[in-house]
Length: 250
Image 1 (cartoon, rainbow, N blue to C red):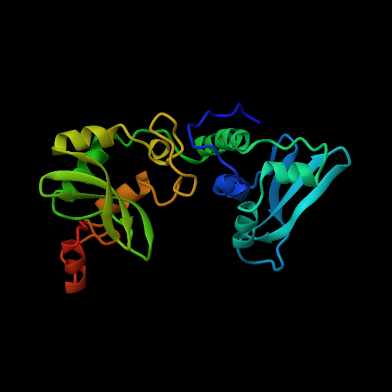
Image 2: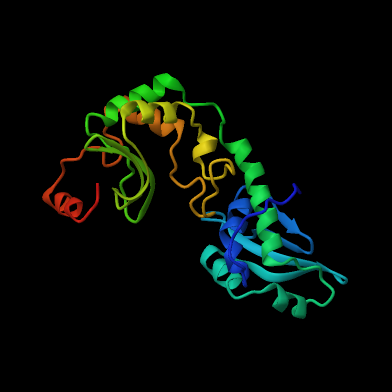
């Protein structure tokens, strides 16, 4: 297990605070054991469908099952009810880590996985120029479906904008650039890893957001190749969309 990463977060009380990190790591196919606490993929009731999860404790009496294999929602709910202290009381002598210790080690494991999954190759000036030119036409790069849609790019007047996307619309601005040259220069030196949300150098984000519809080389290439029609793509849509923009959406 790699050395843990120190993450400045509020004091945690339940395992629910690291639930998304646990799921992310286990979904990658890796069992995760931190001191005497172990998480791994569980046996599903059917051959098909999303993963199931289980939790075990290694103590003086050997390995014992804490939580039988269960589906995602049930597992997340169970974690939210568990504390290190309650597990220590349930399994005397077991070496149960604190939530902060869990978080540090899990973040390190997630970073290790991310360096294998996401390329650090810079996007380069050519792709950056293509994206800038397409955005300058008024096209938006934004996924379009219900609820959270990841990270999108757009131009608002003369300002280039990166924002979180909800229901296909850029809502929460994360960063802006005053000129095309500034945006191009920034995008040219980015990479899939830098934009994944796992890179400590660019700022860690919540585990649920890491790798979740982020900016990638594939999305940028598709956006340029499609003539700006990726996701919502066009600013001028139906009247309902215009009404939403009047409420502050780009």
